[in-house]
Image 1 (cartoon, helix red, strand yellow):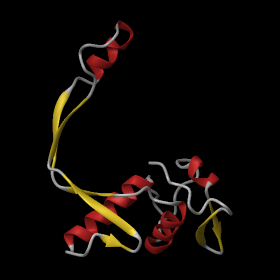
Image 2: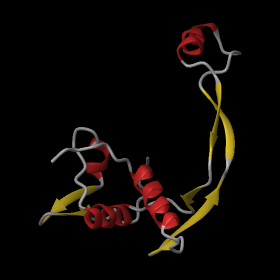
Image 3: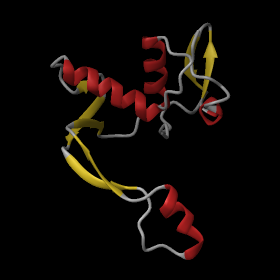
Length: 125
């Protein structure tokens, strides 16, 4: 199986995108989504930085970016919700790419489940 890094934040974004494209409500299970965008922002390193950061200005110059409309979860994704997502789509996260995640989840009988007492912890992106 070819494994791709899929962070919890990316998973929620993809789920919201699929719901939006198919005209489904953006209240998915217990997850509520909020619409954002379009938006403009600046990525990269600003020019007014301390001397020790000047290399970053050269490597990552500030530039304007635009994003269209997108949906974002109103509340943090819990470990339980993320395990439900993993099991629903059949995604198997890589231990080496997601070591922190495996402090919160474990695989039981071929499915992912929150470790005891971690069900309501928020998943970080």
